[in-house]
Length: 222
Image (cartoon, rainbow, N blue to C red; front, side, top):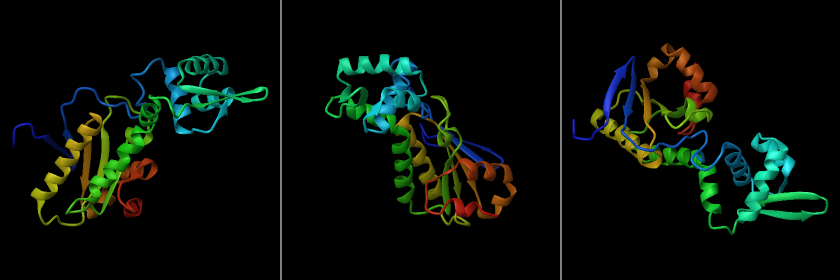
């Protein structure tokens, strides 16, 4: 095995390549390093929907108390990150798109979506494509933390003609996930005829999986 290559562990057809990393992303809350949780929640709410909203609506979207939301919003307005709009008696707020930090706030709030797009694009370049690829587990549900793996199910297209090339593809994906996010990549590889035997896993992936290849969920049907 080359120096620095991911180590391969095998248990019941489950293959996980664990990469040494320093600061992984908390994919359930990529803004976790930026201030108290209530501030991050308001920033996420402002970033995912740029339409002006009332403090009460933003509080509901962020899952914080109305009074807490107003305190945070007032501070963000003073700092220029948010804008307060005059709407009669109502106070409406939105992210200030001209602020130098606005692209950073939006990027942090949408980091998980960007990771999914990159996974799809990378797998689409494979010379030996899988029959199906799905992200599942905490990264798919959005309820993990900075120590959570990015779990991917790969269903091979029957017998792989070149197992070395297949392995290079999967190893390359693991290294890219590390570069993109710092998180571990956990890979479960199955042959098509072994899918029925993994009923519990397949049920979980059907319930929470995010397709990384077109029609991947259809490949899990009995």
